[in-house]
Length: 372
Ligand SMILES: Cc1cc2nc3c(=O)[nH]c(=O)nc-3n(C[C@H](O)[C@H](O)[C@H](O)COP(=O)(O)OP(=O)(O)OC[C@H]3O[C@@H](n4cnc5c(N)ncnc54)[C@H](O)[C@@H]3O)c2cc1C
Image 1 (cartoon, rainbow, N blue to C red):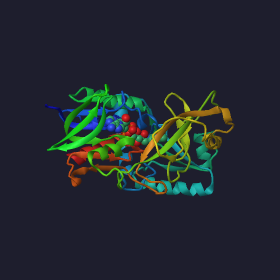
Image 2 (tube, helix red, strand yellow):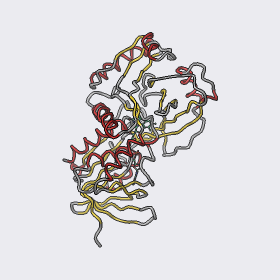
Image 3 (cartoon, rainbow, N blue to C red):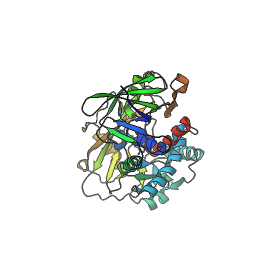
Image 4 (cartoon, protein in one colour):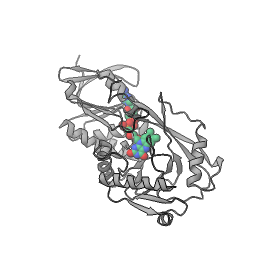
């Protein structure tokens, strides 16, 4: 029995898998994007802050630093060209004490090393001139930070790819991958529960939280270093009702080791949220409860004077696929072309947490360079 053959198969239609298909659409005769849900972006790519990061926080030379800085530029250009709604809001990292003020100097140095040269430190008065409701002691201004409509971004990638001979197969879960001669055979369960097989010369594993499982099914050591994923949950609280606060910029605290800290999240419709927090979990589970409400309320009071307990309620949760184990200070994106392990043309994308949305086009270009 002959099976359908594609030049490239991408596992996962989150923002990274879709961006890879978009960038590679001219390099491959036909691409199959396989997604287990019935449409794109149902997991991490629609459960985030939608922030276009500048690239301030990450160690110089890391993939996170390089791909975020490049991705920021590419994403603004793409949004402009394809009509994806976005806004260059700018961002303030606010210090509320002298010690935090000194941290801003370290962040500024890091940013400049990463090539983010437009940042500057604002005094208390300068910060207040920008955001009158913010009572911080100083702040780091990042003018190139912004927000983007992540759904419209993913739709723009999908529709450009639809104009080629490539295909998005929704409701199709990749159950395992085998090597067969020069090809890879993907065993897929389709939307009717039927099993089918396709062959591909190149495979890109962009399965996000499940990238370890997909890699494991192909024979990689999913529990080994560089593949084992840790899940870090982040929740958001919506600020309800009439809002007397009028922030124009995103406002962040100084970061901690696991996350950028609960911050003011603005969306393109004028909505205001607080989030996300960060704590390690064992499972992918998006249910909401009010267990963390006190933390959100305490942080909220710092930014939103007069905030009342009933002004905030749980909004959504997302989960970061991290290579960073609890207690470890930093782990980079893991982007591997696996020829060295005997899997030529197989690319694993591991630990694509924040700034993965910002970096999506730069990650896709990086994958292109690894393959060609
Ligand atoms: C709380 C939070 C806040 C964040 N904020 C930001 C931010 O402001 N800015 C930023 O740049 N980044 C942010 N991020 C990170 C960003 O959201 C992610 O890096 C990005 O969405 C990852 O995209 P992805 O395509 O790799 O993964 P996903 O969106 O998870 O996509 C993977 C896809 O693979 C599919 N899949 C999995 N297994 C299979 C299988 N076996 N067969 C078929 N399909 C499969 C899944 O269904 C899913 O659709 C945040 C993340 C979180 C959790």
